[in-house]
Image: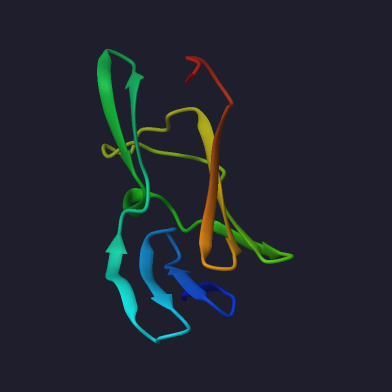
Length: 117
């Protein structure tokens, strides 16, 4: 399923894992980005004895999506690294369209030790 947020100027869409599908300018119809499956985010963090465990959006279980008042929220209640290990954190981001601008906000919530900062 594709999750879409759009206004009169822009349209951005994500797949079920929160990977970027496309970004389109609505006023011209031009596809600015078309990369289905593109990792929209990546984390690098210490995990166990590994100082730089990598976490990609494409390796996560399907995300939870909600759309409130023109803001798309994408949440991951359990985040795993590329080896499938639970990193002990939740991750979420929001996308808001304001005319021709995209506004992003992201946050991590620690749910177990070690703490991610």
